[in-house]
Length: 413
Ligand code: ZN
Image (cartoon, rainbow, N blue to C red):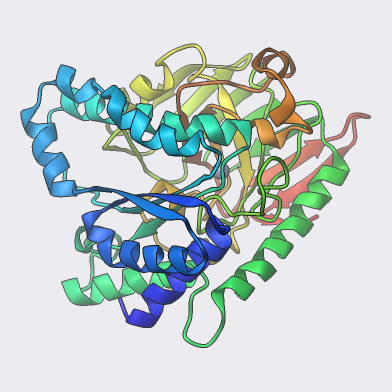
């Protein structure tokens, strides 16, 4: 990457992403592939007044060797000190968290399934340390991506290595609203305001339920949680933190909590998805009275099953998110094989945990109170894309009126 690209990415991640304030400590979880950006972020964080930057740096090659050579039992263990190293910073209330990951979509192709699943299990346990604070609404956090050569070749297979890599760099900068002649922080301010207009419209409509259909075969209904809030990057951090922040960069979605007990019908995935390290393709999930009861896929269905049917909470929905086909990411016309990017190219659902901050006063409510109104609690959260160019979303109001929200893949409200 060019120096100016690294500098601008770092600036927008620090200023807009976690919006670090003087005296705070940045917990930076990253890997060696993204080290150039990690260093720039560290510089920028200190310039913004950070008290400290603690970088937790993995290496994909070393993790691959561990996945090949350790037993599944060993891989599944997450030592207490690893959790504690992050938790001890976050529980002071002075920590902010940023994840910068370079996708390596094929690095684990030779790892046995049992080892992959075990490694993914431990990774999820570690994420739950951070997720715990996210659910309390007390943490400013953001996650982003960084290019790798292997990833670039997967997304742009028709080009030579160098061109593919550059195309991925450019695509990432573009979706991060980083270009040569404008200030990305200003660009994001504008973008967040636009997303807020959309979430406000949906909040004013205060739907009781949604009905989503597409020509792929999706036909699914769900109630929304009572007092739900449609959130977007424009609303993040209104609750229990000292400054607005943007979780997930890029982001193009407006999202809320479905009542996890009310989901019925079938959802067909419109993008392939890596689940616990394996690519699951052409899949569908059938729900009855809130619970996933069946699923199918043209490859690696057992990885989908393992994630979906892990327990009674992972088989229920935790998120519904609307994204227009006019999203700049969708307009790039590529599958990125990366959840963070692809979920911002299409409407999506997630099975597993809901977001308490998508409910009015949700972060002040107890787990029991939230469960009572249909907010799902779970050990994982797996987004999957259902958006197509013909997707239709109809909202049903409390007095029974039907309002078309999206038609032919785009918003009509
Ligand atoms: Zn989402």
